Image (cartoon, rainbow, N blue to C red):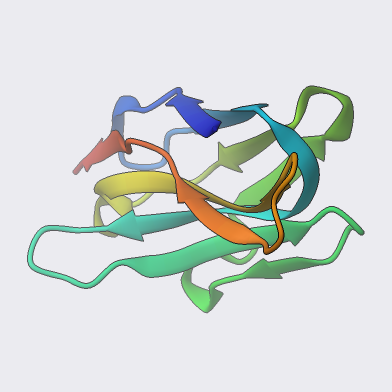
Length: 121
């Protein structure tokens, strides 16, 4: 089994910063990618950013220049540094990972439990 555990959400004022962490653990053979999605009330879940273990990174246009994803491959952990936060960034942020588990035949997608980020105006 593979688990994703997130931490770091909270309440911050407009213009503030937060840092999210997501650690993958369990029977991991290989991580292909990890990233962050978010879902605001009444809206669909959307991709925020994704990093492959080869190092490629994608960002949603709405967060470019403000958010930075990084990874610690040795710890199977990704971080999301969020600066210049805006009220419209308020959402539940979910960590996601594409992982081949030990003994697995196919790469599967795993999700964290979600962490609330609230930006007050």
